[in-house]
Amino acid sequence: MPRLRRVLLFLLALAGLAAGCSAPSSQRPPESGTFTGSASSPIVPPTPSAGQETDPWLLTMDGMGPYRLGARLESMPAGLFGDSHAYDPAKCPGLYGRSARGQYVGVAQPVVRDGVLIEVSSSDARVHTPAGDRVGDPWATIESRYAGSPSPGGWRTSPSGTRAFVVPRGERVLIFYIYPLQPDGVGSISVGLTDFSLRRFLTGEDC
Image (cartoon, rainbow, N blue to C red; front, side, top):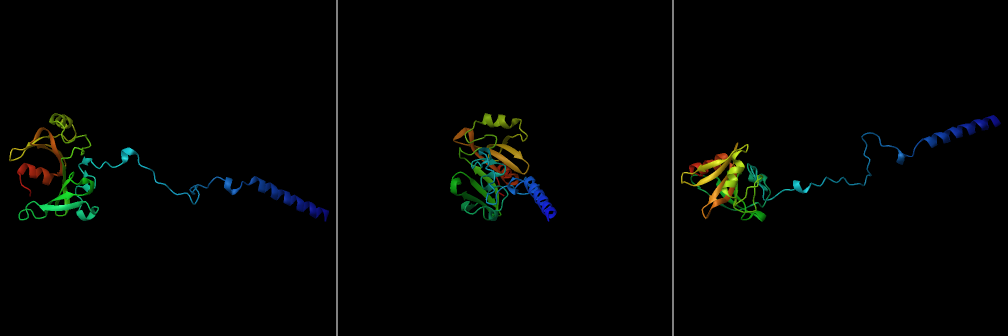
């Protein structure tokens, strides 16, 4: 019996030593690939910096704000468009000028052809391009800014004698128009599909 008791005590001692060497589960390092946060901790997406926030007045070759060139109207958010007027129902069916809504009332002038947005224009001083162009800028500033750019611009003349500064970029074009009452600076800025905006200016024909 004493010998059996010594064996039992020896086994108990070994069990205690093994328990002491094993760290509690809360102190063990996580296994590779396992989630280390608590189950109740929400996963918070990163907050964009101020420079990443959308500028509603930025006019690019893609359009302005929610008015994106080449987008079909049914794919765009509801409530962007108000009244419409046809350019020439007999000659140009499907071509409409549309009024903007919300914060873009009186700021954006969209043009739609066959249900697709093809041009956005503005004469509002808040609107600006990525290069910093704004309504009212002197023509010398516009000329120097685009003279050595990857997409050099130049003056073009319409059949009626109206001049505009045109910056083509593939299938899209940026056009700076003269306002007759303020001919020394940019009167309005337009971005559109080349086959509509530039062709209309150079030919004087809507379609």
